[in-house]
Image (cartoon, rainbow, N blue to C red; front, side):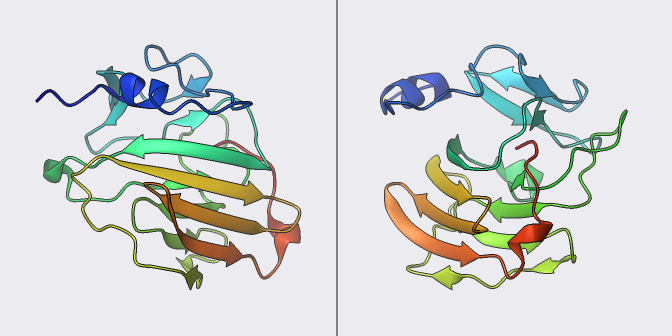
Length: 171
């Protein structure tokens, strides 16, 4: 059976009041390095050793983000969704200060302090990076709280120790 394209999978899960930040066809609304990013079958595809960040041109603080993703085995890396930090410097695609959630198992990294973040794990997340997973991140900037669900099951909660350090920024 054919695996549905990312855009088809998204359409199968309508979300009233949600705003799509990626249209599945173009880079409108995004910054990226074209040498390392393409759009394949309605999904962003990152590859290669160069600038590996693709991020929104708009800034977000409170959000509900639904990401359908998988990792190609050749990458031998991990996916990271970064937010609550300032934009990269002009002309750069490198983030230096933000929070990161890694789908589909919800590991977290603090790029403000360069360390792993402790979080409340409700149930283990998937470690099958090659399978398509849908991760939902519910973020409240003022409270510094996150809730993360994978494939419809909440797996993690997090509260930042100092939410005043967090800023509205790109995803």
